[in-house]
Image 1 (tube, one colour):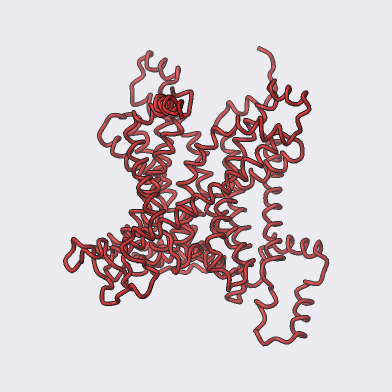
Image 2 (image 1 turned 30 degrees about the horizontal axis):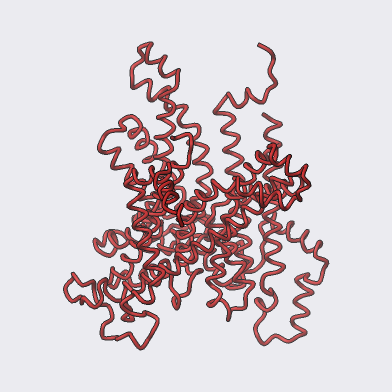
Length: 328
Length: 307
């Protein structure tokens, strides 16, 4: 177990190093930081001074080393567009994205798992068939279209829910939350539904497929033959083994949620990191793009590593495979 | 010419066409797609109006609803937008650009993926190791994020004056460069199986060069699954293009794709002219749904395990 942990951490560190190198290359070759940071009427001498001050005259390897050290401490320099430290911008936006993703993920799990179990246990029911059609539509309709339709129905036509922003947020010093006010909670509903819908259909299909597979297994047949009641059979024995792969996929999809939050945040003008990133892509604001890339990759890598570890803990068969066979 | 009819009959009678005729879903989605392709190809002559020709626009006709709503006119079946552009014509032209980007990026991804997969699988060693590590890293990120990053980098590398006219190429590159991994992995796998077979050994003994073996002997035998991946990928590519355009980093409003049309329509959501956003969105959803259904059918039809 310990060796496995070390191996996974080394792998994760390597991926982060690759990502950081890509970020450095973006800095080095994309746009000219000097003309982006200085006013347009800066003299040649100003520019030369700035170059020297920023260390752009040093050898590339020295610059690379400095970039990695700074990045590891969360320092990505100044945004070209807002002229503020990138780390401040991201720290300001992080809570909005985190709350959105958290609510969407819980929603997707809380609805996806029960619906998946239901469709697996009653494959011929009208609700199951209807859900299958809806999930096919859910995969083909682009998420931003879902968001627009939600706004069209619930904001424009019915006027029940706000269509943009986070509502009133409470500032806790290091974190701003929309959970504590009614307007904050109301503003969260539509974006969370839009973000959760695709994940929910995915989880539903996955749980259904896995559950059908498990229900065909021998040990379930034996349990049935032994006269164990259906309820216990389904929820105690079958569900446990169904949820292991679901856990893995969900962990990986959590990264997808962060990426898809870019689209949700654009549709609902949600002041999160994704919205910041899209603006940065639009204006080629390299420091923000690079910092977002590194931060999101870091979150992905941490999630992936954790999922791998959990998988190992949850499924004893995986551990058994790694220990050398001791003869029968 | 004499053996043309038997050939046609053999094709009609083959497994794949039989399974196609049997599947109502496949036939319907193929017909829908065919209609959409034809509309896209002939949009300039089919469309009732040229939405990019200012001389054809009459500002008195702006913001008209679809013809069945009160105040609508049969001259503009699906209504007009704020600049009096016919929504139906805009959709036809938009579909043209969406499909162009979709096909071009799928071809780019397929050519790149097949080439790299073939090289990696046949040569092995360091080439293979490096390629597969790159593929692993790319696969661990959601495709939309990768496409956005490549898009940002490409646009940043261009002077800002050239950005609008090169939008099409930037889009094709960013989507194509995101999607090659799947082809490369599949082709690499089957290449590694093929290269150990006797006919390759025979070709090698006869003194055939490496490139010739790869192109003439291995390539035809590993192309099968590529078609399935390409079909499913087309839906993905069209969707990615629409998403990028919707986010404002894709096609400019002067040359709108379906995604751009939805983005423009979205800005007028609150003025009550729902038709400028709902119809392009519906067209996009039907297009992607049809491609996905056809792709699903093709995957099952070509899968020997399911026969």
